[in-house]
Length: 417
Image 1 (cartoon, rainbow, N blue to C red):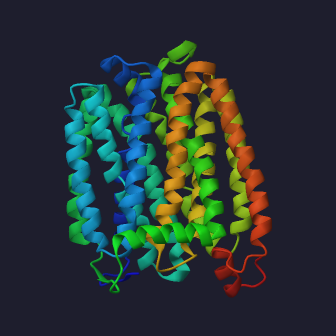
Image 2: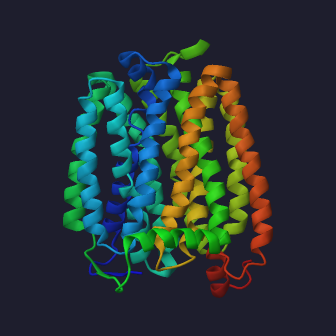
């Protein structure tokens, strides 16, 4: 496969640029999520149909992960990310002018595909980071990605309150154009060396090989899918809860609904700490802890169905757990093969966002069918399943010669096992 070297050092400015790019791209998947009640009413569709807007966007993201992200292992990532950002800009602009539900769905699918730029940036950062700081750098970039997702809700709510949901998409298009310029001017210029005989179909086929041969990857794919299903279900359903749909006691404005994303941002800021724990060899114990946090978060979310202060605290706890699971998973996945980080990202994130597609659709359906209690009960079930699976995987990986970050940590400190 391709090898990549950077002619620009990985400074704090570059890491910040990676984090912001990942965040702005991933945020494109969710600008309409807190506005689903408004968009559905404007286009004359049901709650379940409105929820499918996010599912279709995530389906586009899945396509991008499967077919675009692998290109990062053998083309210049700087050019690839810049092109995706420009496509995102165009898709958002057309979506803003969409005359009806069908056109909007086509455009959000295209935006979803181009949002895969976020997952080109993450392995790009891992590739140019020094081994001893890789977990911290990936944690910082992933923190930027999740903050972008959560901040997109705040941004969308505030803008929609003034100019409507279409204005949100117009402003987002401008942001993506600005990020394309920033990437071109400041991101590391990479030299790509691709061995003869390496073709795109072979790259895609090699992803299947990685999944078949790396049990650690398979484990994290399953855990990641559960994690994202819970995350998407919660943030889809909560838009309807806060808008007062189906008997909810809340009746917040678009701006107020968007501001609830700030609670999630507070939880997401824990990501670099989780990455540092992985770098120090505490990944196994961290996995247990973050799944317990997720379970506690679901309990608090249920209590917050009618108490706004409890709901805010619950969102902080919940998103801390979600981001902790994600960083712990990716720290292990990226340590498996230094030459295949983009393809490892594809394998892991396809599973991750497949869970997201299911979660978004399920969250809207569950809320319409059984209300907030059903949403929280099924979410708690995913956390319990995640803990049980991790207990099984942790046991089997003790006998696995390659144990992700743990193997590297053991070399640095054999007592931290």
